[in-house]
Picture 1: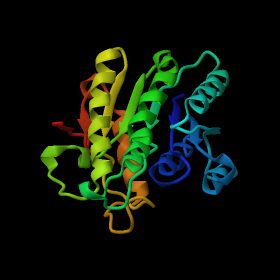
Picture 2: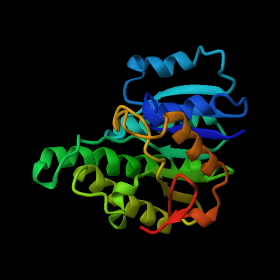
Picture 3: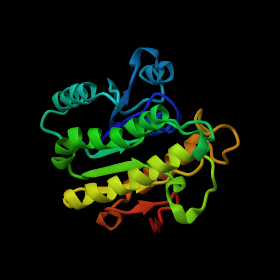
Length: 235
């Protein structure tokens, strides 16, 4: 009976993970987002005829430590003696095609807070729940835009910087917690509000890729970067 927590679950890939997971009666899903009241698509899933699993919608702002620890206590109470099998650090932001010369300190700080600070703080808060689970998996949703060898050009500067930082955070997290399976994953270029319609993958396909990889995740993936086909990619 796997238990899951997904940040940034009100739209995009986060919503895609929730939509697929709740089709199985075995899954208990904690869908975390900043504003549950306005998350209409997420709230409608609670009443969906396709919902077979158990769904809890949790308020969690990844840039607010108080919000994170309040959410942790809420999830801990619901779980009781159970642990959290899968933590998916999915919440992220991007500026539109920014160049190095476009960067301002306020913009950069904002993106760093969400894309690096969020996974760092959420993992710190929830790792004890993951520790007492059977699967013990934490995944940081990253991107090949954060890998220098992929040579993705000059655009998406702040996003690329933060995904490179997230990759290093993943490596350090695994070194600190070798008892957990912690890795970064590239879900593929999917059609979301953040990426636009030019992306080749539908959200459902990207979400399915990630969930398939998570289902088979072993310690072989620990501290590594995994692409959307399940291959280990050099940092």
